[in-house]
Structures are given as C-alpha cells and as structure tokens.
Amino acid sequence: MPELMQFILSGLTVGAVYALVALGFTIIYNASDVVNFAQGEFVMLGGMITVFAHGAGMPLPLAAVIAIVITAGVGVALNKLAIEPARGAPVVSLIIITIGASIFIRGVTQLVFDKQLHRFPSFSGDDPIHIFGATLLPQSLWVMAGALVVFVALWLFFTRTLTGKAILATSNNRLAAQLVGISTNWVMTLSFAMSAGIGALAGVLVTPITLVSYDVGIALALKGFAAAMLGGMGNPKGALIGGFLLGLLEALTAGYISSQYKDAAAFIVILAVLFAMPQGLFGKKTTDRV
Amino acid sequence: MKLSNKQTALVVLAALIAITPLFFPSSYYFRVGSLIFVNSIAVIGIVILAGYAGQISLGHAGFAGIGAYACALAPVHLGLHPAFAVVLGAIISAVMAYVVGRPILRLKGYYLGVATLGFGILVSMVLANEREITGGPDGIQVPDLGLRAIVKTMGLDLNNSEFWYIFSGLALILGAWVALNLYDSPTGRALRALHGSEIAARTVGIDVARLKLQAFIISAVYASISGSLLALQNKFITPDVAGFMHSIEMVTMAVLGGVGSVLGAIFGAAILTMLPQLLTVFAEYEMLLMGLVMMLVMIFMRDGLLPSILRRIRGKDE
Image (cartoon, rainbow over all chains, first blue to last red; front, side):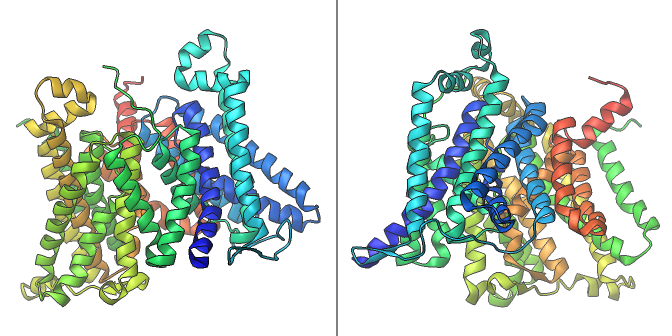
C-alpha cells in the first residue's frame, strides 16, 4: 500500500509538469493551429534563467518572475519572427519550423549560459511530508498546485473574460473573428506570451526536483505533446487530465513493471486510445469541409 | 531523342554521382558522399509517404532501426548472409508497417504524427533496453557485407569509402528510379489524388485506406534499406538510428529539399548531411545555425530549396 501511494504521488508530480506543458501546447494550438515543439524549451528557459538570475544575487521570487517574463518575451518573438511569417504553411513545415526554433533556442542557451546541470533551493525546504507511509517533497506540492491553479485561471480566463473569449473566437474562425473587430494579431501575441509564461512557470516549479540543463526541453515537449494528444488537442481539460494520466502511467509502469520501459507504457496507451478514439479522450469530432 | 522529366532526373542524378568524385581531394569525401546517398534513400521513402500521399510520419527512424539491427543480428543469430539480412529487415519493416499502419493511418495530421512518433520511440526503446540481444545503448558490431572482397577478386581494389560510395550510389539510383516510376503509375496518381482531397479521391472510387497503407509500407521499406546500408557501411550501429531526432532529420531533409520531388529530397539530404560537417568549424554555434537554417528555409522557401531555386532560374517568380 505505501508502495502504491509512493508511485501515485511521484506520478502526480511528474504528471503536473506534463499537464503544464500540455496546457501551453493547447493555448498556442487554439490560437494558431500550430503544435509548438519548442514548448519544452520554455520550461528549460524558465529553469535556466531563474538559476542564473538567482546565482547573480537576486532573491528567488524575483529571479523566477524575471525568468517568466523573459520567456514570455521569447514566446512572442517566436510568434512574430517564425510562426506569423509562415502563416498558411502545411503542417509538416510548421513542425519543422518549431523544431528548428527549439534547436535554435537550445543552441543559444548553451552559448549564453552553459551545459551544466543546475538547481536552486526548494521553496519550502526539503523535509519530506509523510502520507500513508509514502513520502512527498514539499516542492511536489508546489508543482501540483501550480498545475491546478494555472488550469483554473485559464478556465476562468477563457469563459469569463472578453479577451479569453476573443481567443476562443479566433481559434474557431480567424476571419470571422477579425470581422467582429477582434485584433487577431494581438490574440496571437497574447497566446504565445501566456503559453511561454506557463512553460517557464513549470520550469521554475520543477527545477528543484529534477534539475535543469540546456537540453531538458525536447523530452518534455514530446511528453507534453503526447499528453495533449491523449486528452484531445485543443481542450484544456484534456490537457490537464492527459498530463496527470501520463505521469501516473509512467510512475506505475516504472514501479511495477520496468523502469526502462516507463516511456513505452505511456506511448502504448496513447496508441490504444487513438485507435479507439481518433480525436483523443476529450477531443471534438470534426468533419472535413469539402 | 527527347527525354522525359523522369529520365532527365535520373540522368542528372547518375551524372552527379559519377562526376563529383573527380573533384574529391580525399577519401573522407567519399564517406560523406555515401552518407548522403544512404540518407537520400530514406528520404525518398518520406517523399512517397508525405510528398505523394500527404501523410506525416515522425517515427520512420523506427524502420531504419529495424533494417540496421537486422544486419547486425541476423548474421550472428540466424547465420544469414548480411545481404539476405537486408532483405529480412525490409520484410520485417514491411510487416510492421502493415500491422501498425492499418490502425494509425485512419488518424490525421498531428494525431498521425503522435502515433508514428510513439511507434518510433517504442522501437528505439526496445533496441536500447534489450541488452542481451541488441547490446543496449552502447551499440553493436555489424558483420562485413563481403562484397568488397568479391569486387577485389575481380581486379577492382577499392578502399572502404570508395566502395560504399559506389554501392550506395547505385542503390540510390535504383531507389530513385522506382520512386519516379511510381509517381506516374496509376497508384502514384491515386496517391496524389488523395493528397489533394481524401474525400474527392474516395468519391471517384479510390480505396483510400489501402493506398495510404501501401505508401506507408513502401516508405518503411526505403527507411529499412537505408538503415541496413548505414549499418553495413559503418560496421557498427547504436539505437540512435531509430531515435526521434533521426526521424525528424528524415522529414526535415525531405521538406527542406522539396517534399514533392525525388530530386529535391536528395538535394535536401545532401545539404543537411553536409551542413553539420561544414559547421564543425563553428562547433559552438552548430546547433544555433542548424535551427536557424531549418526555420529560414521553411519560412522563405515554402516548397523547399530545389523547387524554389528552379523556379527562380526559370524566371517564374510568384
């Protein structure tokens, strides 16, 4: 029993990070129909910039805020310089552009900072909390709370605010949104800034547990992508549940079957779900316009 | 005699392969050349799948992995000659493509992307984790093909790089010939039709599911053979051959060069294979420049390098 509890707790921690990455995917996908493979680099930037700002003598909260703001700026730049000029390009080209962007960001980070592994202190110490015989790091609570808070905030933003509704309208029909006076360029800028900011937040929250280096992004992007697809692309609820499910699956496989095949289990389940539900768990069924 | 487009393409390709070695200052260039050819073979497979049929795969390196490890394992465990191991790898890849392709080819766009991605990752994971058979992440030796010795007895003494330059060059010409023929065949036309509009293709009586599956299997065989040749040439292989980055490389080469045309894809493979060799001069900046090239070409030359350049030469600017 304590064993199972332990696996569930570590699964939820990892799952929260996947959920945050998947939420970032969802926002950009909704605004622009682009799956941004550079999403993992935002997480990496969040961690790296905090490490170096903190190392330069800034208090941790300030360093974290600076990291999130800079990363949001990187997201906006990515949209303006790479995504917007390629509007209307086929899916494959967009995949290559965003993967190119992720390699580029990694290359720059490695030059500006370094190739070492880094961490900074946990927010509330490293004394484990005991729950049903299992242990949990206080930092894990921060990560899980982060995912939930971001999800609720996004949900309120998309359903209760005019700006949020404008983003939804743009994703639904770009031209029609322009016709009713929505500035779709502003919507795109905002979406990329939010998405990058959320990614950076995930990086800030998880770095004390998993450490950060210039090359952690791509694995996170793949997992986040898988989580978003599992839940159904474009659906924030799907992203959240997909993320936690993926984390749990990995932790349980690692615990009970084989730690080497933990990633395999995740992808086998994703394949199985897509066979049965080609739109993911919560995806909308779409029909083609002829 | 007037040459058709197809014949022109093959003649140009064969001429390039035959003539460029005259300018090679050292045997290292033969090595780079044969790498380009091996990559091109896989990329032609992507052209058939993505360029003809319009389907994405982010996991084709999985098939390259199967082809590569067939050459490493079959001679040792089954006592098969390496040449037959190439065939065995291609057959296994085709069967896998059939089994996996049937369910996942119903998916569209990014969903197909993540499903193929999953397949590729599963293959690379098995190759990395089943240490007793595959040697694990450190890789495994691959037996010699033995063909160079045969060529030598016929009086032609080639060093390893030269031999593989010629051998993979011939394989590439053969692969390009098959792909170019496929383009104008009834199957090729049907594939291009379903690329244009799946629904319209179905309306005129094309069996969309079967055709997509065929394209998937053919492209898997190309990837598998490319993996086999890589393994035989290097005499050593690691699970990276099946990794995500290798899948992305294949797609990038195809799209960068021009996914709609076989020659374009080979051009893309040549550029992306040579780029890292050139960039080693800038060691630190390699990643940065690589990413930059990928983005710039896709933004400013949407149809890929070769078609964009040709259009400019012919003066048909947008």
